[in-house]
Length: 284
Image 1 (spheres, rainbow, N blue to C red):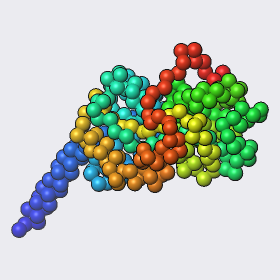
Image 2 (image 1 turned 90 degrees about the horizontal axis):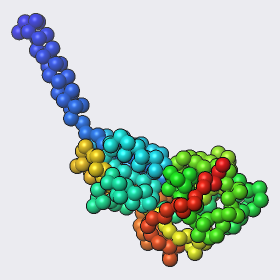
Image 3 (image 1 turned 180 degrees about the horizontal axis):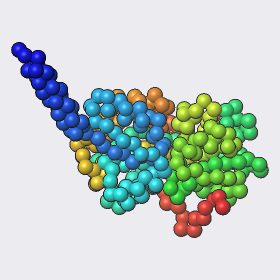
Image 4 (image 1 turned 180 degrees about the vertical axis):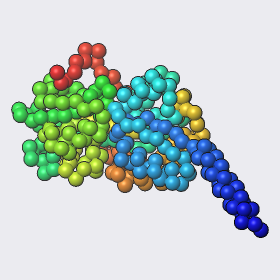
């Protein structure tokens, strides 16, 4: 066989490999999920694990659940909506953004007080948040699930007016709410107990069971804008599978209703809370 013929065969083989590789890249599936950042660390690990096992790439967008929902509605895009509480899933269903039949519960969330490591201000109970000089941070109740729950807890326990002067900042997402206390920007936050699993510098002060009106959960649903419903369903199924639940459990999330109920046996699971019509921002 001549040298020229060998070179031609090699060149043809290289071109064939490039063509096959190009087709593979073109055929690779991907989905996009709009997520409240209450699920951020576990969701990132779950997406990477799912991609390794299926080849389906998962693009994750994180922010406040209300912000994520607004972005989906404006862009009319996204395969999955995974807010930080059922409140925003209810809105998404009402607005026709998700398929109600596809909703699944991924993990449960318990409201708690989070303080700096070692609890230097000796905050022991909810009423301590009203002590003079204590600086409190919460999520923005108008856009962030954990902020809505903070407002609800204070109102439910008739402490809103007493604590309000100490609320010095609103955060725009769950992760940024947790960062407030991790960086010692405030003395305490009202957030999710799982925040204490995210940072070694955060301690948790549990609310009394009767002080918790509702326990929350992280739901997921397929968007009505989904371009690849099959892949979206596969990822949602993975999140609620034993493997996906193990990932969430490893990050300190509660994955069963019975375990969550131990913190507040008589609290409602899920449900919806709406800010009063007279609501005014707590931070001016």
